[in-house]
Length: 286
Image (cartoon, rainbow, N blue to C red; front, top):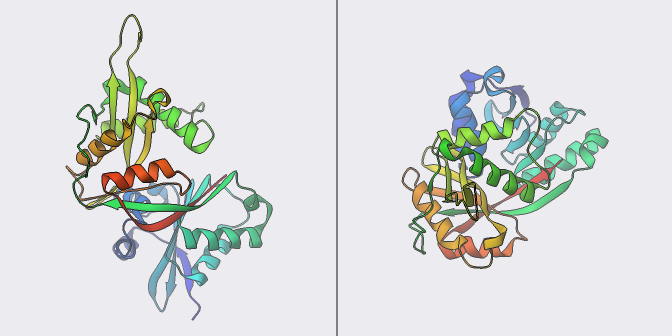
């Protein structure tokens, strides 16, 4: 049966949230955004296409700086690719692995050059969740970081992003610094801080950091996990990450994250704490 596609608006929010609730952990980024800003493109800052079959919303696609497909319908992915068009304005694609694979292939076939040459494709990213207390005692030095530590925390966040993505997030707009500050203001930035020392470290520094990137209902997603390179290999990240889970579970019963399949040390760390794999995501970086 062929379906229809249109841009969603605020009146579609209840039906859209019901669609997201079918797979909340995989859809957490979009759920977090629309529950805060709504579905109207002028308030969300981008369009969300909805695909209808038999009068029912069965799939959707968030088309902002992150392109995020929702649902696994083959027909929907093809319709979204046609609607998105040849001009690529997104910086990345992220979502369930099967949907990303199909949508990316369709965009390349349909529109060619602007979609064909990403910087990197991370085709297999285990989505992990912990629904119990950590199996490892937490490091009590890890706490929520407020804006009084903005300079040190932002420096660590830039180092994490550059290492993870391969490019610096710093530009003339200052948007990344503002984003990090908002995380701190919301109580979603967590880290360990070494105070300033006049002899060795004239400025305070962050030795471990992690953020809650997305949250909705009882679910949250941890991102930006980073340990100062000079401290790696000492197992300091295990109790530090366990404490991140403890802090998250003060508000959320299900704490999730996703990790590159080739990052064996990180996957082993998360499993040791008590995370289990529940799905697979994928990311295309431009």
